[in-house]
Length: 420
Ligand SMILES: [Zn+2]
Image (cartoon, rainbow, N blue to C red; front, side, top):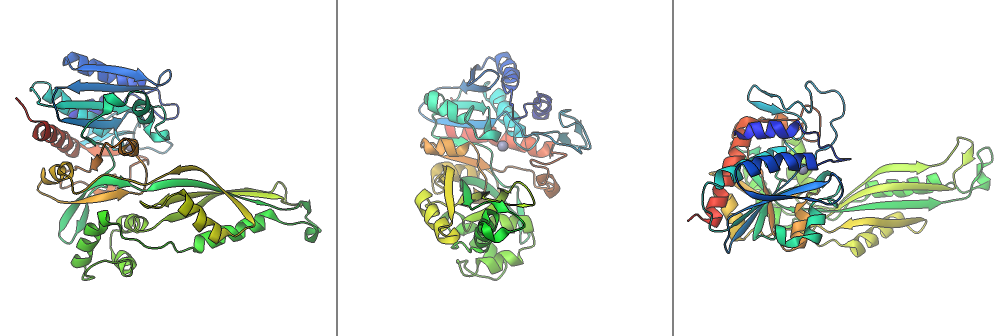
């Protein structure tokens, strides 16, 4: 079966999270793998929330192909049925085409080819539930309850950025790390009174606003972490900036023509703080006695909760309370390891380690000591416009790229595990 067919079938199973209903995807994979005689199982963390695991081969070495079955909601305004799985003009169209049913299909296709060989090591395939809502019902559940089923020397997962043009060559990226995330709540309290005599009260919205403005003006310390220094230096030499340091990185990024790429890189050189929701007040003629702001903060490796709290306290002052109910440290897999080098050298391409500003299931693997990498394998003539359909309308992928990814995964498994 062709890989684009598998992808099209997967798109037609609408595993939108919430609620997920990933067991339907797992059942499809089960039929596919049963047909090829590959041992497999569905593990449900809750009714309907099934993850799918399959294995090939035995031996000392082990490799994990990870992906997720769920997708984000489609929303309105598509030019085609988001769950139609239409194949046309060299594209597969629909929700999940890039994130990441293409990877599920490519990894499944590689398994179906590899089951005809005798691998000298163990290849694990795991398509998990719930990645798009934090992974508690998927990767996190599996690693907590069945860690041995996913234990491998290293893992391949989603996460790589699409290629970008640097000079006259394309640069490809392998996601080797992720920033940490902290969702903070700021609360200001005041004294309520009639809006016509405001001096009797103490306005909580004003207090919170002052903190929000100070947060927006805060300039986080710039730090070039070693893992992305190679990429920045490469960009620097290309554009006559020379070696890149915390002092000249902003000038380099300001001058870079690919704005989305430049701003992504900027967010990888510092902590980011973005106040994205505010709730306060009940009526135009009542001075508000409370106001709450929700702040999305992304931290670099080495920046822990204590560090963050100290920074926040120094910016917002004593008038506003700070809570950080959800904090995840940044995670990184080694980039000087033989596993990384193997991924790097499989294609004749300029390949750089990359840190993602967002989060994937790879962080759960790294927390258990399993290095995880997200190589962005796409065709040389990959249309950059497709990148913009990720989590957006009209999501689609070119068949060439999906085939290339599937082929890459098959070669990677053969080359790492070996065959008898
Ligand atoms: Zn994804």
